[in-house]
Image (cartoon, rainbow, N blue to C red; front, side):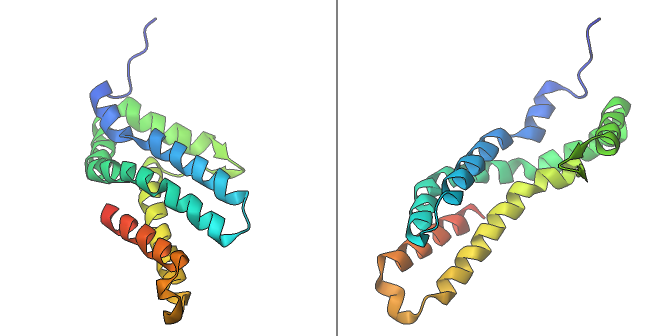
Length: 150
């Protein structure tokens, strides 16, 4: 027996956008920086990945449509709504209840905003005397790239 899709494939693609690419970038970045203790190496790692952050722009462009589709499908497609409810009720992730799909779809936005805040804090901790150092220039360059995404 052939199973029906929960929602039209084209719209499911809009909902998911490029979230897998963002997950892969974030997973690789975290794996790299968790190995390091030297702030300069961590900063160099972020600097190497900053061009990859452009994937967030595409995701953010489609996020309002994604959230609207989830709401619409939840209201109009009974099987979609039931699926979301069953996943939320029955599955646990690391011992915690799963979050609603809308909250999960917002995580990349929250992550990039947190990066922006972290780099703003780091820049503010650098004294004016440090403003000409390579470390400071990399910090401000990465923050500028993140600002462009948002």
